[in-house]
Image (tube, rainbow, N blue to C red):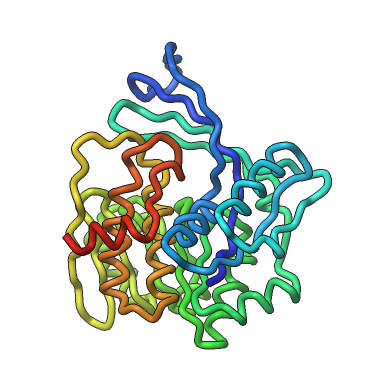
Length: 295
């Protein structure tokens, strides 16, 4: 499978409560983690057993070298990860509250300073599943999805960070995986139920609305089905849960698994991911996911 996405470094402060506008919260604990939605999803998929090729960019700096090294250690193919002179590696500033809730601000840096080339297109064409997000330029997202669509390759768009979805993406019909906030923003409708109905009427492919501990809601081929979540008594950090869901979803689909079974596996993996601090620390490996699915 091929992930076309972002690679960041996450600067994380854990606090007793999330700050309100204008408020300073003292006493936090600071840590640094490798991140970026694309890189996180690549790691989640690799741990779930997929062979993953990553297409993206980092800066020629210490953070970029740290990000690349971490991906390589997970077994991700980095032949198409370019290093850009004069552009910093992407940075995410993350504040995590006592129940694992978070606030995130991202400076994309190198992630927004590149376009696909012929070598990238060849990687996409050779993939069995393609996964991308909104943390790379929209032109890259559209071209990635169009290339997959032209070759009949299943494609997943995790539309995060939230933004309106252009009609050209809706016509291509990738599997969309918004959370409830991203759903309403994607269609410009603040009511979740009517937003989903409107998006389904305009989108040519499946929609999976992720709902945290409540699970996920699938709308596809005229049917609507809810897949229950898995409650976690004391979540530590929800930062990487959505990325885990998407990476595992793609990994299962790359094996030829049905969409329903892929959603079940992704739900379980996402719930397992929130038990450790940082986007990747709690991401489960394949044997752990299989064990939970067999319970």
